Amino acid sequence: MSPSMPWYADGLRFSCTQCGRCCGGPPGHVWVSDDEVAAIAAHLKMSLAEFEARHVRRAERRRSLLELPDGDCEFLRTDPDGKKRCSIYAVRPEQCRTWPFWQSNLRTPRDWERAGRTCPGIDTGSTHPLPVIQESLLRNRDAKLPL
Image (cartoon, rainbow, N blue to C red; front, side):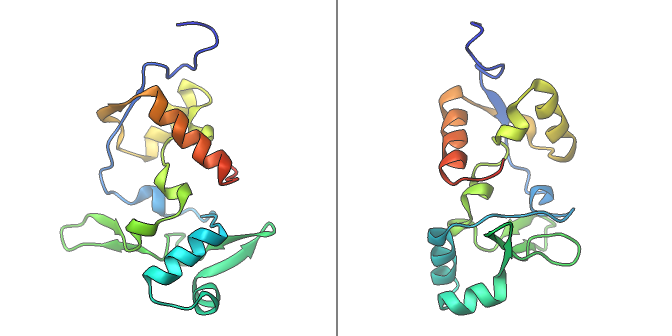
């Protein structure tokens, strides 16, 4: 591997196990753009004003989805089979779409390993090739996510 290639140039394995840990505490932020707010509001058949009043908070001069007191995303649901599901999956924010391929998880192999301690889907399932990972990183950057 050339020095200019990232340590994950051969790809990384990930398969979502629907454990919901990426959507739960400790408290944090799920940053949302204007377009994401509009899409989620439309999906929920709510006006923008109503959606923002009920589901969005201002933080660090941006907007973040509200959380439950335990830190879980308020859109996370538990099915009867115990699987965790996003109730707005079709319109979930970019930050959610690109997990676990965030810059903070990809700086070093150790960072990836650390993310895997809480996410059982890391290092399982199919390999995501480098171009897919790079696309996630670009989407995060373009969404101006602090990842």
